[in-house]
Length: 611
Image 1: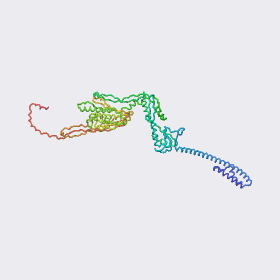
Image 2: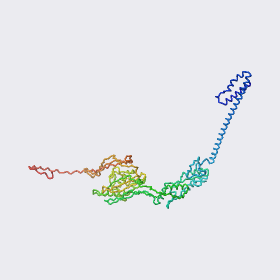
Image 3: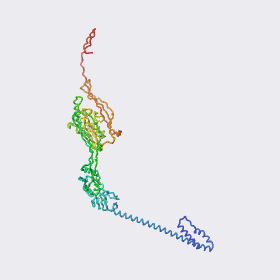
């Protein structure tokens, strides 16, 4: 029984080990299951069965013991593999920590800043093409003019060590100025040459770059070489090269536009007037310096620091930079106007009218001569009164009728309003901005109502501004009228940058209201009541007129670009009447009646004087 109990315990222990060594869902099978079924009968039978059972149990025990040993060995191998994996992971972690520590130590050694260098030399200086702050700096301390540059820092070869930022700035500015002034690049073409200085190429430096370099110098942690790049103006350089081109024989010439004059003679008076007109000359091809080649060589010389280089560029065949076609677009006729006036003669024998016409012609001719060619730059304003100056008899202006408060009176310079009116109409058609314009107090006979522009020497001026992108040219001249020997024509032509294709400007007006003539009665005590009224002034109607300038593109109305309202107040009719009582008539004697003769038998003739 003891043996059986021990066998049972042995089998139970083995079963426990086996179960602990496999998934719980696996059940025992085979020999172990049979041993569990046969254990009870063995205890009930006699010695023979007991012996047999003991052998069987002993054999089963040995078999179970072998299986348990193998399982324990397999478990041990798994544990060894786990330990090996843990060791490898730990080794990798240690390597990572070591590398991180090395990088951190190197960063701290450089003061927390890392520079990105190119090439194999770690101490290579920053080139002139690189921005001083192109390399990111993790932390930069703020600086002031009193901040001391402690490290061995040089900028453009100038040492800044031991200098304050303020002193370093002055030192660098002086050094840069001297460097720029040292530029002496010589451009040579055969026996012709030109020296390029810093002024001829617009050499300069960026002040912001200077300040950034000073900040970098103050924050440097070791030997550092920095530089401030110099710049130049290519447009100015090309302009300077144009001077060299002018020295070359057979160089290209640009087309020209110039104002020439022709004479207009008035036969009846013998006067000669000049008329301005445009004359164009084509340009020619010729030799020229290859500007692109010069620019390339200048850049290379500056980049290498060779400020005394000699450049021998190629010479090419060049074409005119300005053509006649280009000039004509800049001097296109934009607007024009012609008005007519009497200058001599009259159908009556009235000497006052004749004198007024002659004096008026003197004033108009003088004003036209002062303004025969007006050249106005973009954005500039023109003043009519400023151009003519003070219009007095002392200054050569004649007395002629001028409109004054609805009537006419002689004034020095009378008649010059016709030129300002002609200019006004031409400028409107050229779409030029009108700054100051006032109409007469009554309509004039040389333009339609609403299109006149008066001037007065003391307070009324006509002004306009060149609102185009190019120079404005205004021609004023006089010619003989084709339809009358007693008349002359005033011409005003406006030239400038051509309008966009298909664009034109047209005048338009509308009568708003016609104002009736009021009557003004003047009582005269020297006239009798019965006297016939005397008309001192006939008077005239008044008008309110709107005028417009419309823009058309390819014949289609686009918009109205200018509009104004002109009011001509009516002029009253002045009538003078008497207020003196009529005299009492003297009494007359009554004639005595006469006897009527008896009719004769024959017919008598009628009294004398009657019919």
